[in-house]
Amino acid sequence: MSWEGRNIISIDEFSKEDFYRVLKNSEKMIDLLDKGTPLNVLQGKLMSSLFFEPSTRTRLSFHAAMKRLGGKIIGFSDPRTSSRKKGETTSDTIKMASAYSDVIVIRHPNPGAAKLAAESAEVPVINGGDGSNQHPTQTLLDLVTIQQERPPSSSDSNIDGCKVAFVGDLKYGRTVHSLCTALKNFDTSFKFIAPEELEMPKKYKEGTDYEETNELELSDADVVYVTRIQKERFPRPSEYERLKGTYVINENVMNELKDDAIVMHPLPRINEIKSTVDSDPRAVYFKQAFYGVPTRMALLAMVTGALEEGELI
Ligand code: NCD
Image (cartoon, rainbow, N blue to C red; front, side, top):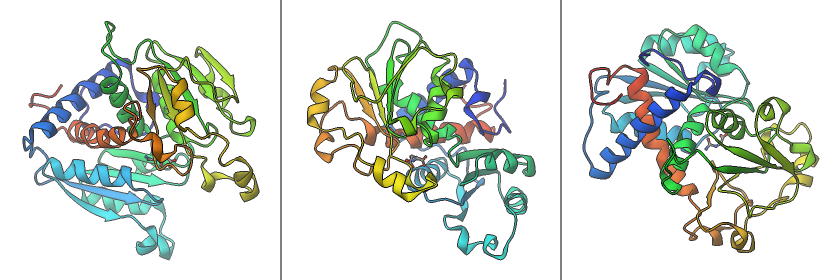
């Protein structure tokens, strides 16, 4: 199936073949970045970057990806500087961006906003996070990270055979919702570690091989995926205050981990991983953030059809 014109809204829309295609194309982009080979396949193209919610990595890595491919960017990172402030609907903003550019990246606080945006746009829409719902491109770079950082396996991917422990805010964390959904396509098992109030919603657990606990017990995990308690999604601030700091990854916790385990975090971290852990080779969260660039390069090239005739698949 051609990827040209495709929206990236929800990870449920991806088949196993889609995941492999993204993994392969991202790997090629990693190679090109490593070698410093310029790839100007998006020269003359414009990306609209519409961020209705704060972002550092998602926004910067999409911008870096577009520019690395020779394209240019329009947009805003603070909706208060757009006509949003005058009461314009998201749908009208999207129609404009669609007329002005070749691809749209949107981050929005409302679950479902990216899907609505895609209905108003004539160009591909990429979801950069919609409330507590989904964050599909984060998941794709998370899969690239596991593929690159886990030991080579005899299976089709280095993701197969992994036991993945999700730690922290599994209720409001959109990154874990998307990643858990994607990993159902691989031979993986899960451990959900969260305080009772922040447990993984049932729909993500269904059909998976999982354990659930509120103990930070990680000795059997191959991948530890740590998340921030999502302060902005709590109906009551007191509830956040009570739950923040429930789990902290420090050197003692690292001592319990397998030698070839990897510790991931979509970032930003607040206090859930001590900075003293950063120098441990198993702490791969900054490499993970780097993989956002090649993964998003692959996605931008694929949905704009820039590489239809090129060497990427
Ligand atoms: C995440 C997000 O925005 O959902 N950050 C990111 O995109 N790397 C995680 C978070 O904010 O906790």
